[in-house]
Image (cartoon, rainbow, N blue to C red; front, side):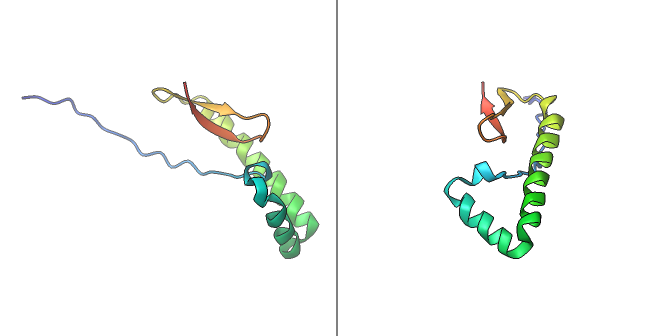
Length: 84
């Protein structure tokens, strides 16, 4: 009785949350971060999150997984995986 060799690969995909992803927690997180890092630190953190999100989306855009594709949410600027 032969069985097909089925191998699977685990992909580690870092998730970068933007301020829009935080929902109701956004204001609390922003205030806490400004207290710790200052306003410039907060702005730098937001810009970095957006750049990382954009880079991640560019990288994964070319990949195809059975039944799934990356989708860019214009409202939140975040990348999500959606079923076709």
